Length: 393
Image (cartoon, rainbow, N blue to C red):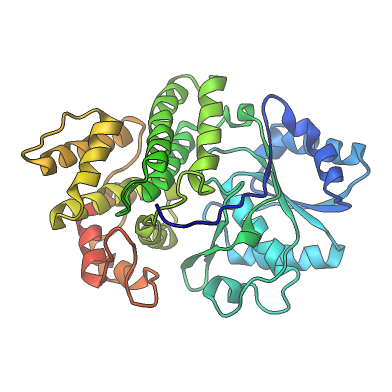
């Protein structure tokens, strides 16, 4: 197990009706003027926005709002939020929605005190040094952004989708009522489940040995998501399934299941180019890329026993000790079968992606300084292109 430092400063308020406590929680944090950041009209039509603003009003907390967040949140709205937040003198950003609203809120929160272009922080031209505190009333179990250090923003003019991982990105408050996820369309539920699984799997596929605690934590999260997603797809109002999905989403990406090991996030970086180019749902893109990423490692023969362990412990495949690659393949096939079961695509063609775009997609994948991406096995141009072509079935 590797050395690690782990700090999650987020306060979690979880359960039935906890969104009504928003005002009291923000007052305890010293908020005096809040920017409420949200997506479309669903939070208004459902009455959630009214509940939140009533809770703030009850505690005498002033507020302004900015809607319009889209999946793959856009830099243009971040600029608008920074300008609004500065003009109004807000001291807290509250995202009401899912991961897209949260990532956009994180960017606004870092951008308000930064004197330059917030995009400098995302491209590494400058390092974050200050922020406005961020909290959320969560409406979607998926990204884990409610306590992760990550935020991903898309710049429309260059079609760049870039993530920033920094401790200042971690929200200070997450208000989580599983009932708020019950009206999600089945496709969004499936995309969310796929994203949660990917976050745990990116930590699971490591070359570290003797990491039994986090191995078992990853396996528990992945297995729980499989079970809960199947229930939620058939019975959207099943509270326990929704609650398990929501909490699994949180711990899958705040590094609870990833400490002491070096994970691999190449699948996310590769997928980002799909969703940036075609504006597809992130979870759907991961459903295409992650199995292809696994098949690539099977092709190259890298750490086959880790792939086989995934097959045995998650999908209950029988271990073939004479041919562990056969076990690993059956695990990948079981994973793809589950994705299809919940309505996810597993090929680029199903996403509407074009074969002729593969060279450009490959070129755009963001790399480490050594020109590669990933840790399980470092991927160069040829490897990345091969993964896209495996996905292009």
